[in-house]
Picture 1 (cartoon, rainbow, N blue to C red):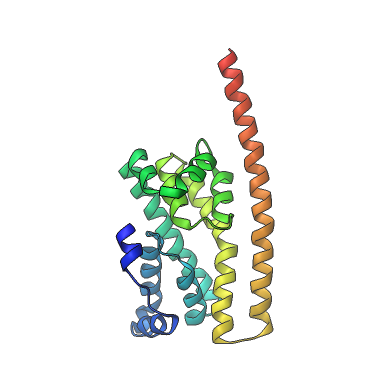
Picture 2: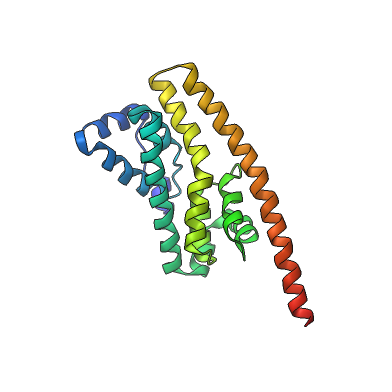
Length: 207
């Protein structure tokens, strides 16, 4: 994964658009497959989401991007389950501390908080969730819900680049407002859940 991040260069938006268009009727499936592959690696998924908006528009682009990014996140999750905790934690590098702190003993709200938190890429959350035993159902649901607003904002940027209009600009602003609100809500819920878990552990130790 480190080698991929350092050596694999994603094409520019124009190059990506040309490459995907070359697949013709298979372009949506090719886009999903490429998006899932990128989401497996430390390579940022931003360019894929923006390209999705440019290529397919806001609605179809959102659907295809969500399928691709969710598939990639799930792939990384199960790969981490196979590799084991120690191997994955070492590979997380500088992200290890914050991932362990948020995800250790966590669940739905822990994944949402990290997924929405600025500065935290997708890949440490994916691999950390698998390595630290977040239930797969909670991981999938949290990923789908918390990734959607951010993906929509990036896809709307791509759609705006392809067809500048007020609607696409308004979607960008509205989606980032949703991201900020969900970040605050999920963080508070995570803190509340963490506090209850801590109290239960202390009570169990006392008994």
